Image (tube, rainbow, N blue to C red; front, side, top):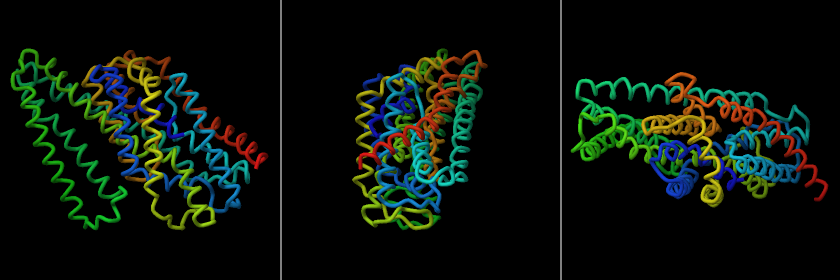
Amino acid sequence: MAFNNGANDVANAFASAVGSKAITIKQALIIAAVLNLVGAVLLGSQVAKTLIESVLSDSLSINPEQYVLGMIASLLASGIFVLLSTLTGMPVSSTHAIVGSFAGIGIVVEGFSAVNWGLFGIIGLFWIISPLIAGALAWGTLRYIRKQIYKKAKKGKLIKTFINKVPIFVAATVALLVFSIIKRSVFADSMVLSPIMTWGITLLSCFATYCATRVMLIKWLAHADEDKGEVEAEKSFRKLQVGASCYVAFAHGSNDVSNSISPVIAIFLVMATGQVPVAGVPLPPVPLWILLLGGVGMAVGIALLGHKVMATLGTKLTLMNNSKGFSVDFATATTVVLASILAMPVSSTHAATGAVVGVALDKGRHGLNLSILIKIFSAWVITVPAAAILTILIYWLLDFIF
């Protein structure tokens, strides 16, 4: 499941960077593999706990043996579904797949009442909200770049404005990452920081990053020709986009690793306690080796099959330049990291696609390949029921065998 998760969802991190030719596919795969692993280890445990505790109803009467078989079935079903989607180049949601698989477990054991439909609805709402937020944020970022930076070209002040305003996005990114690591990482319990210290460190990192980025841009644009200001700005965005794509890769690891490891954590808890985990009972810390297992699995999947889906989002959905790609990456990662802070499993595929649509709509619907978008939406719709049905079939087979 982790292998297929990485193979399919790497497109969310580097599709726009590859599509705008800021980075090669080979470079993208290497960087994405490393940063997905880092994000998975640092922030991956919180969302996994939400999935384990809440998708199935508290009243589910299932014995530990059935529960373990169900978790194995969910891994197999979601992994198979995502693999088939990857081989056809379709960016589906591994989050949809694992949640659908969990629902399938409850349905096959005890019927539809075994699913916590309230939380299921909340998760589903986040699936709708996340692409809308990412799309709006990407559209707003691109509009800001065009209106507040590129229009200065007429006054001969584009380069100066670029140097002053673009670091704001980089600083905001670092501040959010620092805050998420302090509050939600595996080191959060060992970092005893007061709210004042937390905000102080966050704001200090934001200010330091702004200053450092501004110095870097001054160096890059020291000999830039103001008459070719927009061209020079796009060259700088090409470099910045690589960093923004790294931000997406980290964000993906932080949220989507839960889709791979949550069934493993659930099995681990059953073997350790002899009981099925339920909501309201505090879960012990997630073992580091499980986080590493999921992160390494995603890294290998990225390296071997990541190029398949990358082409669909990076080049077929809409044409990309570097400012568009930067806007897509900034919006996607920010949406996913915020969801990880809230411990809510969202689809990074949804966020990335929403962001791509957001920048495409900057020039109206004619900038968007509607046929590809319809295919992607169709894949999203069928993922949950398909994963649930496949889980039920595999569970019956495993139950028959064992």
